[in-house]
Length: 361
Image 1 (cartoon, rainbow, N blue to C red):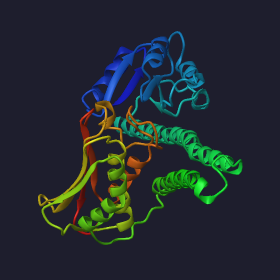
Image 2 (spheres, one colour):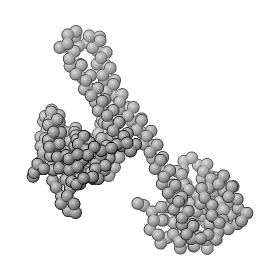
Image 3 (cartoon, rainbow, N blue to C red):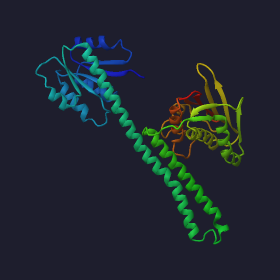
Image 4 (tube, helix red, strand yellow):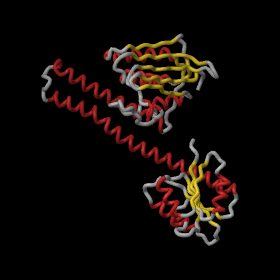
């Protein structure tokens, strides 16, 4: 985790030196000091810190006005403000009304100051996380609304053509159009199912139903189901394993979803070549089953590989989909106390690696 960026604002060099002495040697904090309110506002405008330690009584604009200007700037993220003052007449009410989050009088006890800093940083991180979730929710609604429209529009247009007799009057004439409608609706149903599963995971409502699962047999079942998709693109689809006993404790349905998503994606983004599924075991420091899905497809840009499991993250080559599948894979694997990662090179393919503990989770 990056160190918390703290801005100290005080017209007294001695006070700034004291704060530097307390904070600069701690790896979790990165301190910047300025001596007046105007410099503070300029610094905050260009590089908003995570926390502000703000003296009340300063020449020019005092701490109250600095706090008020910060809070009135809607372009700034939430920055907690801790007011520091040596004057008894300084008003806690005025400071809090101006936008400060806490107030401490000098001379302060070091332990109390550090505790208030930690508390305000916890508040900062909590609010930042809530705002991130709200942004994700808005993005979620916008993108899913767009993606759900496509199969619905396609199905409705085909139905309109059927009603107009564009494909003829007999069942044989309209069968291709009806098949197109079924495909569109299947696509829509798959998207809705993924949406519901992601919601359950994000809301913390997903409970695993544990049983003994043979991953080799489960992979074979998934490969048989997806073989037709590979055949359509003339791709080689194969499973490689040194043994056939890869048993773990897990939720069979959820693990099937992981394998189906990874293999399905590999087929979708591979135009020629192969999709291979490898199973292996690691024995140190504990026994783990390692599942790899390797393709010869489009690959993923280096800058996208570390975020590809986040909400709605897709490579530049991706022309469709909700961007939720890999996020769901990550959530399911994490629930099984496992890890998932990707190695990829654009134009040469990708390898997704899932590592799962073989003992009961």
